[in-house]
Image (cartoon, rainbow, N blue to C red; front, side, top):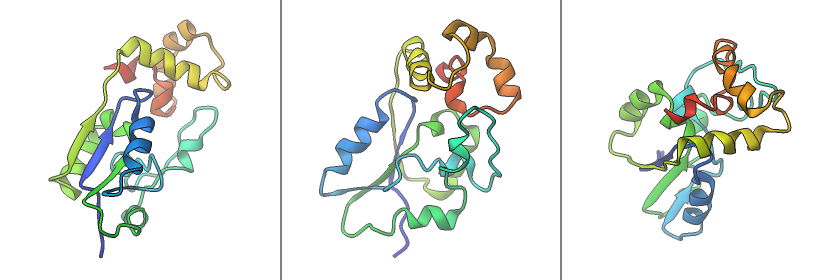
Length: 159
């Protein structure tokens, strides 16, 4: 049987989505996609070419519906079927795609103080971050114009 999620964990990046994903994954009536952040609803059918230093998002995102369905092949008798992609909180495209594919899905939104969240993202990426936190904030508009992935947009991620 082809299955799509009936709930989604969305945003905020560095807000606790990974912990919630792991807690829910332990419950016998919950099926969580084996990939924590497929990002499908934000990036469907897009040719990914993010330019941030690691570019991992270009390889670790699910952009086709057939690949997204495969994430839920393991569903058996679980009543709650979900996935967690913080990017959905920031993507205007995700809103329309979620409404199209899973219109009755429940959304679990995790929020965090925007300054704490931004600094946590910075600390998460610090090994690859070429700037101090203050300078990275100053370079954010340039990063956006150069198509850096969303996690690298510290200030914008707090809006």
